[in-house]
Image 1: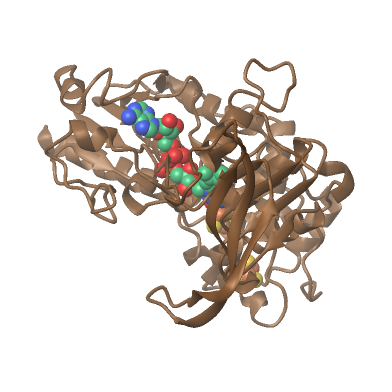
Image 2: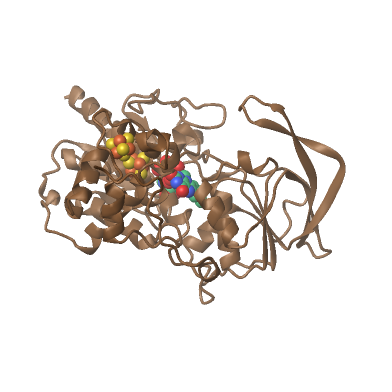
Length: 465
Ligand code: FAD
Ligand code: SF4
Ligand code: SF4
């Protein structure tokens, strides 16, 4: 008889008042006895609807059964068959909209904590490494493939092609590989050591990573083909920030969430001895309501800001960020200014931000997105005194590849047009996947796209022979 308790095992956390002053991980992970207890909540459903909810089809009941039998390392290997970044996905997947959304237990009670169990077995495996098959021994004799971008899409495509026997080189614009996993998601949600371990595993498979290589500037895609690459996968993400175009956005103290988080993650700006410390005021407004906005606000409070406001034009129900992240942010002291829209940023005489002028909003009829349209309330202007404003209202693809690869087809907002399943673009031999195709999405969707393209690239190269 399975454990029929209604609720998931609680995730042990750092206390809110302590964690909001440090950058170490907020969630501490299940203890073995908790993992076994939680695994017993799984009904081992024959049709396992949870599996179809996972973009890479992790064999969920099988791995959970292994946890129940105390075979944690074997559980990790089961996940690793289809997911090359389980320690990352167990931490950042929006499970409530993916695997756990379809869990049968979730119909009446809380779903099985699939993500937390995935994290548990991955952490167990990295703390208790076992000798595994030496995959680097695979002779790369099937052909040469270039991957542009080392985010989850590029890394998973590269890893799978290397396992098939291809000679794979990743070209990465930054000096560090990992994409948003390294420069976007903060240390307290996804420790960088974990991401580095995952990158190291891909390098062990024989994948080369050429850093500081901006494709479109240093080399073009045409030049990659001239260098003998038989196929190219583009996984360059959607890292170009969108601004509001309101007065005052060019004042000192106003920046995009992308710049703020990159400086914190890659340049270690939270370390006072870092070369490029990030200067923030005592009062900070973060404009936007997604995961990126929550990350920026939670970084600001950790950097010592006294009042950090999330300024969002709709209500709590429409906040696009994960519920768990919103709860964690609230516990850490972030102040939510909902139904509030910025009109302008007001500056001092010497060009620094000193306040954000906003207007109150109310919700009208649903718009094309199905969400109720926010409408300005008349005569409701007010100011919030802030010295720092962080804009987090979305991102689009960087136009560099578009400007230098004329033969590719692009969507109006700059995404590459590619086949949903294979990632095949309008140009033979060029494949694309992840945020550069879908716009800003999720880690596991980008990984799934990279994996599917690896299969398509293999078929393409074999068909040419
Ligand atoms: P990216 O991760 O963006 O990687 C693209 C890589 O390509 C980068 O390394 C970039 O430097 C490189 N590149 C770009 N142009 C070039 C070029 N011309 N030449 C060479 N290299 C180039 N998703 C979740 O599932 N859960 C979360 O909790 C979550 N939180 C997030 C928090 C933040 C702050 C952000 C920004 C995103 C978050 N996401 C989250 C979204 C998720 O990280 C992305 O959907 C995912 O990383 C997309 O993967 P990708 O491989 O397509 O692109
Ligand atoms: Fe769920 Fe993500 Fe793991 Fe898939 S990879 S089972 S969606 S947590
Ligand atoms: Fe277990 Fe839920 Fe999947 Fe059923 S749907 S196998 S209960 S995780």
